Length: 357
Image (cartoon, rainbow, N blue to C red; front, top):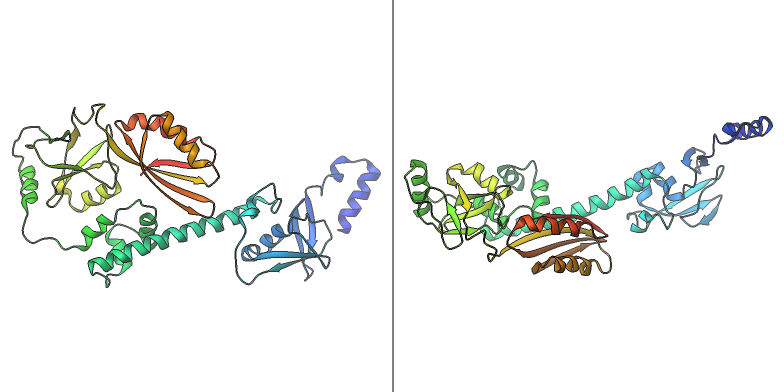
């Protein structure tokens, strides 16, 4: 501090603007133990707490400057002695990220607060996924199965990675059911279909009433998979199920990729027929929206969908602090046209991400 005063005095004598501005963007404060802390100009007690230790910043609840209690938004000055008052437990406030309130000036401090809330949201997602998987294991009578072993069998590095995608509704519990249930010893009629495909026996290129064409086979029962809800002109693939005919998935469906990797012999080529691509055909498509919750957000989303003449069949939403997760089931005849509509939804104030489920 004496060095700073000497430089400032010298700058006044020599008229040097450069020397006068040397310390303009930094301040130096003392801790009660006598340590000197370097902070950006305008820094607050919360910035100081995060500079000392991340956990201290999370638990910061007040500050004494030169022995007097001050608000957390108070800008510190060089030479002050600052004592942080912290709680034993707890976390930061969402208000600290509001620049208008002035709690934080340091980008590093803001990054640490955001990381805390992101970790909190991920923990909630993992807990939700764990609960769903454990309930499934109870229904199947497989409570003795080790969760890490189950995750590895499904192609995940750890159980938490599995819980994370299940909690986000990005991985179907039906796939886990198929892994838990032992294979039937005797082939069912669908096995005959698979073997017929492998032998390459000819058949008419035909489809059923849904307009799905199964290449190289007579007319077969087909159904659109609920996990990915394909619609024209999505790239699709067929998977021969047990007792329910051919399930039609989107080619990029994670469930389809896992099942195809485990039972490649059950995958058969399928394509959209003329009936499926007709304008009179309608398909249910799930769309996920992540956004900052605010008044009027859902109204703005529904206004855009109404302008695009797209019907909403159902809605499910979940709020975690100020984060809103919405799953809309929309009715469409062409997902290609749906892409432009979702692009307009993504431009609404507060929307973070819009995607097909």
